[in-house]
Image (cartoon, rainbow, N blue to C red; front, side):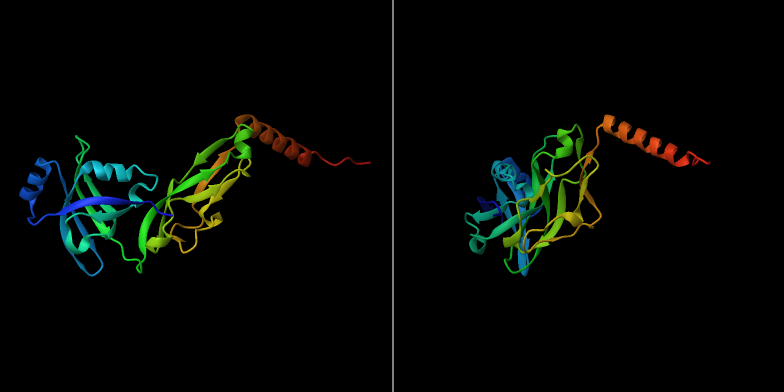
Length: 212
């Protein structure tokens, strides 16, 4: 089930850079809420609340339940769509929030969560992760917190691709099936042994047959 938190905001009547500067001077961060068939609404919020929300396992996919003096937006569920961050001070300058409609599909990047220790890693191999998240489309109620991948059966040289994954119910993964998710790199000793075995087989194959 997707993480949902209460998020306190206030509507902001004035727009423009001047109003945004005043909001920041008062310790608040400006933002906007938009969505399907609604006019954008300017808001302000406490940065620390958003930092706390983004620190959950859901990260950018956390659902925020709006609270405060925001009229018709009170109780609305939103997601963070875009964040502007000051490159020097590392504080939020502005945030865009998308109002969720339970009947309309959304696009999101969902993290990949690997489970277990691969057999190939126990033999000395190295787990190499090629993708840490995947683009998906689904209804808000079907958005998973993560895509779970069991890697325990992987041996040296084995890999998992997007086409091998079982998407959660109601979720469509948008990445190509051939895209690698993870691979177990064989230990160097095993690679050398396999190479020597291959050379030996080649030598046997080239040895002329005995004649009478």
